[in-house]
Length: 103
Image (cartoon, rainbow, N blue to C red; front, side, top):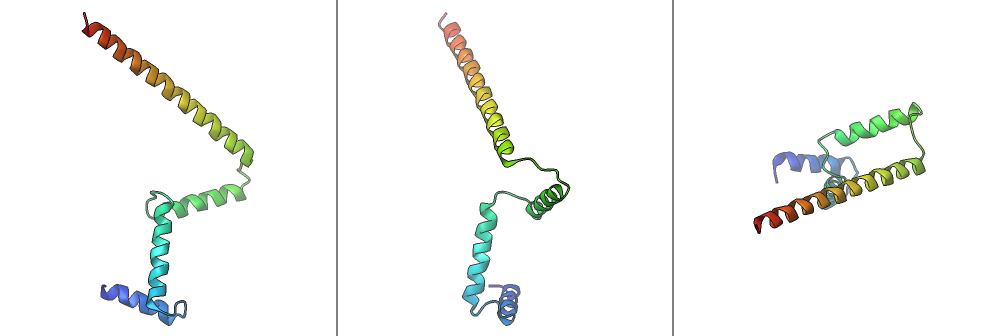
């Protein structure tokens, strides 16, 4: 463990937040796990997005939750439909290729 890390742990112990070094490390690792599970955000990006959302709420620039989920379902259905169309086109292209290869 580096000197810097030991100093950080000591600082947190002296602040009274933690009783043992293990408690500070457990909290640090838990925090890291939580950050990683939120997604692949650049440093500070999640905070920036949250602040942006809070500004939108304060400005009244919001939509109803049911409307938001309905829009997400509509976009998801559109994406699935587009995917099915692309797969049909790919299948048709392969079928023509195979048919022409037999000649």
